[in-house]
Length: 330
Ligand SMILES: NC(=O)c1ccc[n+]([C@@H]2O[C@H](COP(=O)([O-])OP(=O)(O)OC[C@H]3O[C@@H](n4cnc5c(N)ncnc54)[C@H](O)[C@@H]3O)[C@@H](O)[C@H]2O)c1
Image 1 (cartoon, rainbow, N blue to C red):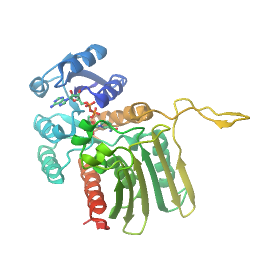
Image 2: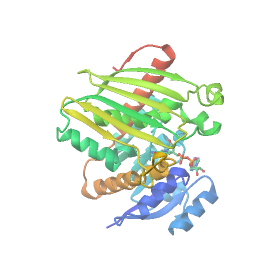
Image 3: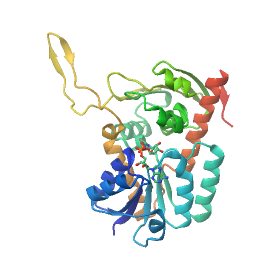
């Protein structure tokens, strides 16, 4: 039996998930809802499903699960609403920008027994999964240092920045989750520095566009994250891990994996231009994992708790950058 989905929010990431759901043999996209009617009807036409209201989706007996792709400030309310309605929930990151609100929302999830997965797609990237598998197999010994490089091709518009919660909660949150995924131990301290080097307007809005973060675990394992809202050469996503017996690396991906060498030197095609193409396999794999967990009754990861822990690290990084000090995680 297919898992039947309703998609809430038909914007950038909503379109990616619609493609992943409809490309999965064990899933069916039944309905779509968006505050902007045209966005919903275009997606419904593209994937042959119905446009429905939230009330209709809530009451629908032919909807098993919702995928929340609406703006961040709507996530917690929607999670609570659909948890009470008995639907399984996949929610895009972050659950909310307030730690208190996330805790309250996760209480409702716990009380209702709802199934909730948070969209930390990078855990499902085939190369990053292979990195994690190599660590688990002991191929580089004990993890000692993780280096995460994560740069967007260009800054988002001001309207996005205003609602984003800032670079740490919006962008670095993926890296905080990857750090936890790869370090194998919880993080106990955060040191961050942040600047405005790309776009003055981002600074005027009270945010940063360039950040470096150092995370440390109880045993002293370290992770360094570098973020920028600009990379002139494309979407820069790399991982390097140093262990007691070796080193592991996941290099940037390109739509075309060729190399040309001639008298001008070595040349390779550009990187992916952004997340919609770079992580297409990861988005499909995370939806597959969600579906498999719903069908088999298996544990769902990443959980709401993973979402909360990444947000706690984001808040600690902001505190560290603004107060210019190391912040301990309680
Ligand atoms: N995991 C990832 O890689 C990733 C990537 C991008 C975005 N996101 C997250 O996904 C969410 C959406 O981001 P996006 O970039 O797709 O945004 P977007 O603006 O492209 O799309 C949001 C859609 O939601 C609709 N909408 C707005 N308010 C609504 C409401 N109250 N009810 C229903 N629909 C509403 C808008 O009309 C729009 O179509 C954000 O929380 C963002 O953090 C995650």
